[in-house]
Structure formats: structure tokens, C-alpha cells
Length: 94
Image (cartoon, rainbow, N blue to C red; front, top):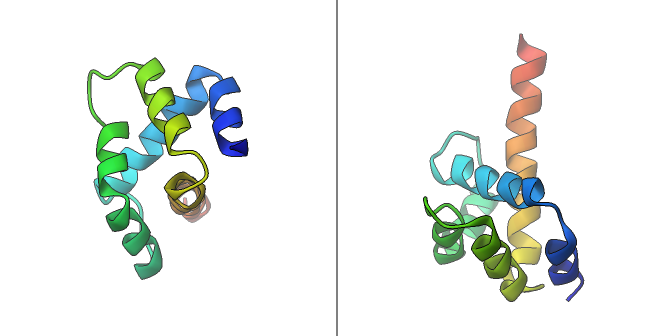
């Protein structure tokens, strides 16, 4: 329920960032650990909804809010940590 409240109050750019991070993870543009891959595979349908082109931010917010603390509580930290880790290593390697 807490995550649902946070999602419902978040600005559109936060929702877009979560969806973009999901897209990057789904496309293999970030390095994922085996445990992270399992989490993403288990939540494939949710990720597919989040990365669907043409879907409004309002609809994606609704999808994120409906999933509540279940898979979303695991999915968001997994996706964001993988993306941030890749981004950090890219920045520091240059």
C-alpha cells in the first residue's frame, strides 16, 4: 500500500523513469545478475505492460499502483539498481 501511495503521488517523470529503466533491462542494455534475471522473468507480464509504446503515463501509473507491494516491491529496486550500476560503471570508466 505504501508503494501504491508513492506511485500515485509521484510526478510523471518518475513513472517514465521506472518504465525506461524497465525497457533498458528488458532489452539487455544493462548487466543483470542471475537473481535479477529471475525476478524480471517472473514479472515479464508487468514489464511488458510498462514498456508498451503508445500507452499513456496515466495508464502506466495505474498499472504500477494496482500491483501494490507485491511484485512491484521487488521489481522496482531490481530494475533501478541494475540500471544505476551500469550507468555508474559507464561514467567512471570514461
